[in-house]
Length: 440
Ligand code: SF4
Image (cartoon, rainbow, N blue to C red; front, side, top):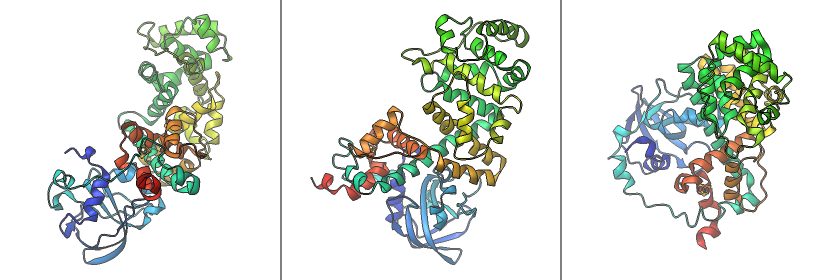
């Protein structure tokens, strides 16, 4: 069975039931004996607490964390989470990292690849599992009682899932940085966020035709007029129709100058007058129209022109996201608050984390971890709205941070959309706390 189809809960069961040899080996060859497997927490933080493990003859007491892939340690954000300081052993099915993962305190964690030590195949083990009775979960609100009595329990799950989602975004940037420069990766990420959700491929086509090195040269030589001409022309919006003119009318530059500038750019930079990207304009609100978004991007790059995009971003103070937001809010045409938040969460915050990791900047890594915790957020999109309703029903529940919103997206997209309640952390809470549901 492919490892990506094995739920983490199955690994926890294997560990809980001791369905493996008593003696194991770490990936770096040390002998491991499980003296006591620990207490399965079914909750936030490490999977098992108070375990006793002997490693090369030395007894250690602490927590055990299990993952399908070793890299899940990073993608779940445990390296930043002090709750994982207590982990003494990392148990994985697949070790896909070159070096063992490190805890929040920076020390490498002994890692065991468990597959060779199991009593049989994962399929054999799974065939022995009697499914958990989840009652009518998914048909009605999942945690209305807990939302009223102990909302912090729900917040804690949302934050943990939010970390998981943000780290996945960070890893995507890290991967992209292996193929492209950091600045180009950032630039494409910003265009991608501006294209959300129906016009991402159009924005990608613009980025392909207008690489950062070219657009930054245009920024220095021609300022916002050149930038607007390059983006709108490459996007296929020139000459501007009266409707498109109205969309970008907040720009300070005269639209007739944009058109003549585009002709010059075609000559000098070999930009194409044909093969414009394909845009999805069906039911797109004027504020989200790609012509307007491209004009806003021109404004943002113009502000950053003297430093270059990457240097400009890295020079902004790492506060609670306020400096990033001020820059985004300076764009003309204006970018609305909700879209600015999306750009921060989808691009700027995970990009800076990826950059810190790629450059080995530990201090920046720690700072960005703090920023992630502080970013403000609210329920202002359909996925978050539906998921919170699914979890708390009609109860009042205030979502306060971007991390919580990301948690709602993670649960909504990975869980509710496919009714994967059997591996959803909200279901684990429901089994514990929503007794009436399961007894009624
Ligand atoms: S996936 Fe989670 S939040 Fe969604 S319905 Fe199932 S238990 Fe509830």
